[in-house]
Amino acid sequence: MAGAFIAVEGVDGSGKSGVVRALVAGLQARGLDVLGTREPGGTPQGEALRGLLLAGADEAWEPRAELLLMTAARVQHIARVVLPAVAAGRIVVSDRYAGSTLAYQGAGRGMDAGLIRDLHAAMVDDVWPDLTLVLDIDPAVGLARSRKRLADGGIDEGRFESLALPFHQRIRASFLAQAVAAPERHAVIDASGTPEAVRAAALAAVEAALKI
Image (cartoon, rainbow, N blue to C red; front, side, top):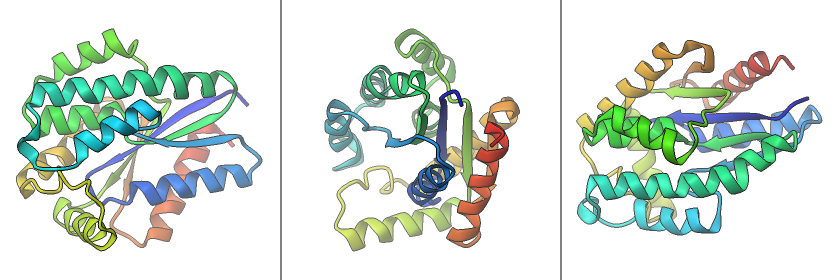
């Protein structure tokens, strides 16, 4: 089959990473060539930027600088990982993509969505996933999950988790609004159930979209 690009989005603690792993395993079990990746990250340069963007105190970056760094990581990711893999017939599953920029830097930080979309069009050639899965969960539940995971693992990636609940509520609203605005390339998954149920629903949505 032809290659495809799938993004998994959602508030912190919605279970994205587990869903990405389950999608990669589930699609590989069907004999498909699948690549799992993440944003910010996916390339050596993107991973270096991830360390700068997700660690430390929230006031470390001005919102406009944060937007530009996220976009810089995405330029590398798309040019060097995603598009070559899709062109080779692979299915790429990314933990976050541009929907997160619209949600976090747009709705969360209050930056203009038009500016973010224009920057995406100019710098990333307006590349959007064939399918975006939005894992929807109460942000208070997700935030508690994510903060515990970071604390238990000693992971210094909690810059956004340090922000108050209203910030995360705006993010959830943005993801849902994005899905409503482009239903043909979004699927909303109820992420409040067991991990097994959420991952099964995500795999079913991908199978339906890819007709496999």
